[in-house]
Length: 150
Image 1 (cartoon, rainbow, N blue to C red):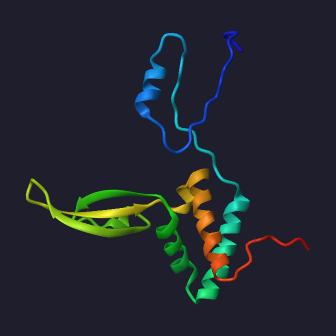
Image 2: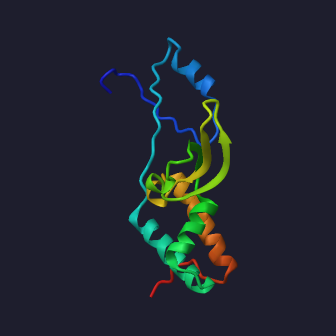
Image 3: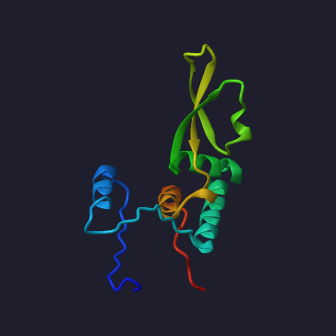
């Protein structure tokens, strides 16, 4: 270490108290840098998701893209956003659902959308939850999710 002091890496999952972390970061006894860390998933995980989705789509007699959209909307994280109602969301978002319309204080109409995170933008934790959903649905439909050695 350049400073000759130990360095500790701390990973905090899911729920944490930002106020407590901020207090910790602002103490004089330690130096804390807070940054969001994401890890890219492995290509094999992505390949597996597509194989399982393709098999599930075939079993359910759906198109691959139709099934993928269903899986995204069922198992992906999402944000709620509002746009002026004359803005077309498909120009900006891959997967979304309209959830409400309201008139703003300025008298203009706004549409609220649930915007889903596409699988290509998921971090490791998000993609893990997505894969858990795919595996669950495959198993419920009698599709093997275990890779067989040949």
